[in-house]
Image 1 (tube, rainbow, N blue to C red):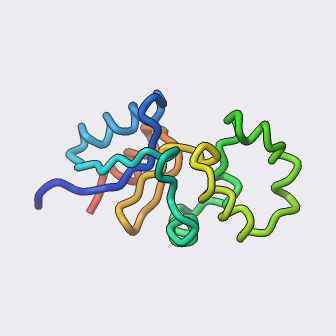
Image 2: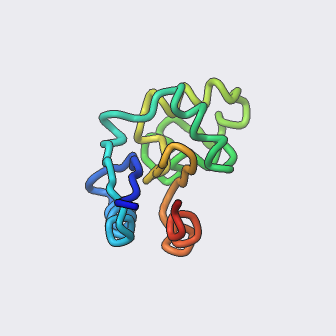
Image 3: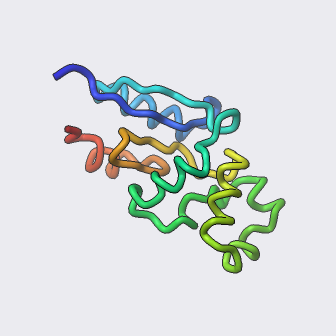
Amino acid sequence: MGNKQVTMYQYPQCGTCRSALKWLKESSYEVEAIHIFDHPPTAEQLKDMIPRSGLDIRKWFNVSGEVYKEMKLKDKLPGMSREEMIELLAANGRLIKRPVVTDGVTVTVGFKPESYAEVWGNAR
């Protein structure tokens, strides 16, 4: 069957990202790691990935990040359209909650070992 492959949008200095990467590698995944600040997912990629994650688009925002706070997005997001939110995420990888992992079908945002075990543990 060979190794399973996923793409991971991550920030190398992020402890959560490192934990997720370690988990995936220990679970026999080949991981294509993409630096989320340098190469955030495009608006087109986000339009595909957000529905696949099963999450509300607001859950994609890194609410504890400095950029989110500086831009006062807590107050602004409720008045924004989905398109505007996607453009914002695509324009600044620091706004995206990380890591984002996808195999082209499934998408996860953030890292919790128990949810990874559920989603990626029995990978096809």
